[in-house]
Image 1 (tube, rainbow, N blue to C red):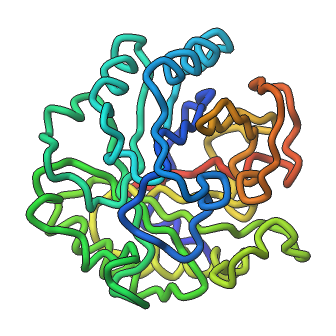
Image 2 (image 1 turned 45 degrees about the vertical axis):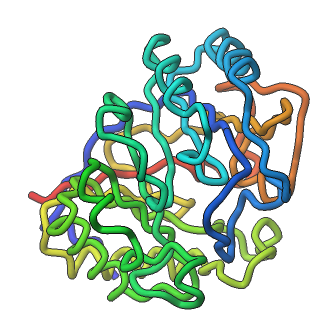
Length: 293
């Protein structure tokens, strides 16, 4: 299948050294395929402000620019507003990954200068509607109060219709400007040794074909962000061959590559732009951005 270049142009990216901090083990859902479940454990722990600031000091000393807050559900952290204020003070760009079910008690002002990214696993519900990230179960009243990017996590259950209808509702009902297509696990790896912990993984070639079909069908105006996962290549940004990610888990646990979170591959420290990608020739966490012509 050919890429529809007649419909899209690709934007140039500015890559940043990024630290993903798992700030809480608490979660209000129990999603199949959750990549963080092993490192979170069953206890309802929250990162302390002291530990968070210590992690930020180390990160900034290493040239860090971007912080992603994950969980669990980050909005359940009792001091999230304080953590975000520290990030603003230090001039750190910040993205909060949320399932969108815990906005109650927050105001849009709490997320000023912060990017919210609502993770979605499906358009409708594949199982228990109280446990999954289906888009139709997103509380519409709360969701409409906030500006957020819609982040669809593709799985083996995903059909192109799921992407199409989710994108349309995200744009027309929630005024989203960005539709980010990512995935649960897949790698460009025939043996699948890095993602055999869940049957929900979609083979990487099927992932590429699914995204292509969606791009042909989509008629809206949102920017489409796509995780490369080893099968999408940028035509505007040089490939990143050194690791620019790191992950910090409560208690001072370090995992460099986000893909190693599943395998609980801990290490003593991390550095940016030093380690070659151990899973592929270029960073699998990189993305491409397509804009309608």
